[in-house]
Image (cartoon, rainbow, N blue to C red):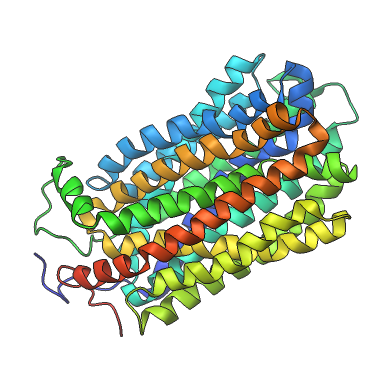
Length: 448
């Protein structure tokens, strides 16, 4: 076991540079992941798809490789150079996003979306593990809150840039791109948003692999066994089960709703994609960071007095999130609907930030990437696999009417929101005990 104080601290300015660059990569990943939500009508039309078939492209196809291969990559990330793993992941998801724009059928698009998931599965487990080695525990939530901004900012930019691209090319039948020839407008949009990934991957070579802190065992010899991970998870099963499944039902609500919000505004209020993407993109870019930063600040503040402080901050976020997402689709006007998406966006960023930081608080260094990859495995399989499809299935098979999408959204939000509150409230005391236990082996004692 390593002794407290034996691992040197990193320079704060450089540590924040690393977080900024990792955040830029996370933003890029969400742009490439979410751009498809703006392209639902033309893809459905050109490929002849139903809402349910489209939902598989929004969720299941991405989740399969993102989760399964994400865990395998995380096994390597806990032992090998995490920076290089991230670089490889960025190149892969960039190429596969561009490939989404070159397909000629549903099966090819499904496979390309799987490839995007494979590449993006390398990022967060490696990035969260690196950030945990660059910052002391009492500042960890704030550092991870900056990284978590990538979710809302990336999604918002996907709307703003994607909406602009679609507006530019939607007036023509085909778009001619150098080397690629004639493409449909939605295909050109995929190719265009993929391009920034290449310079971001090259910028990643400017950061260093940090010294690993908070190890259970001394020495640098790689141990590829998964038995210590399962032993650790078993010893703190209430903590991990509560966080994993609490955030899973929250992800059902998030992905089940976010993937269909553009269609809700089109079907319920007759808004164009460009009109909606402008306003909701601004909400995500402005209020998503507010929620992430507030969540990180509140979690660190609660942590100074309570070992379960991170879960307390997460529950505060749900108080904003659940009412906003449950009610926005029922509003009689698009402006009232957008207004309720403001607290939903703020609240949604808070538990997302808190959950990632909470896992880094209680997981030893040797298994941080694997613990976080398992987290993304569970929430993605449940959230991406069930969320978009649950909304679509209610619309297709219960209501039998596309115009009833708003009620499908409300039902999913209400049920998933109530379950998330119950699970995070249950896990709070268990998480506090796990934080106390973690001080026995962590290089950083925690509170200043």
